[in-house]
Image (tube, rainbow over all chains, first blue to last red; front, side, top):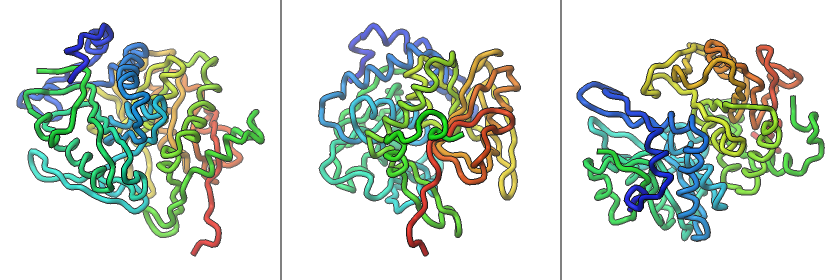
Length: 183
Length: 191
């Protein structure tokens, strides 16, 4: 599901503010989708948050979990507007209290995502937010963390999807909502 | 300067914010009483109060940029920026920003670290607030101020939720005003 396909009039403005940076973080054709230029346009940034808030307000969502670090930029404004908690999902050793960890595969090697124990209660309805979904590995790990503590992941929400990397298929049937696609 | 000394004395929101912060002893190492703001983010009312206080302060100060220090500055900065119609500019650890950057090194207890900002994000003359969750020695904030001044921006104030004792009594950091909501919490009867 995507706002892009729904042709919301705000989408074009948002898309035009995202900068593509070739060959980052490394050469060999990666076209990096840079959302920092979106954050420099207050109207487009507000439209981005509004699109998510309109979708999720009043739906009984009590947790917005954001993935470090760009998920921390979009998640909290959404959480504040819909009356939910914000829960940061972080790289290892950043969270000071007791955590649970979920490992996931990278192109080369593995990484790990952590969440504070006690942040989310069983039965809570949760969203996972990040700026972009590529292979879906990180989002998948995020969903697992929430499910392990008994939360119900209602949807994953990203500004941008790279559909060619088929991340949507890695979400174990959980819905994914994005504003834009990039091929 | 603390919010309580600057128009918000007795404001019950400040107590709610302070109460929502968790202290984690001996993190990241022995002797450090870590001020954990993640519990503040779990308390929707207190989190909203935090943002509202900063928004009320900055909305009429002609601020065009909120610069947030990675990563906890990202949790507060964007909401403030959105409410006052300002840009949000992330100040990041090395190699995270994809475009052309400028870098500023700063001292850690052991060694140095580095903060980066995208070239072109902040035009000269723009009025900026730097935000982070906490100020301790002021090393990171000082690096942030230097980055912004190097591009000709005007840092109007540095804003933090928590200010450690090192900055108590200081109204300024590198000549820039410092605005802080609460002091660190202590644990009663701690080991």
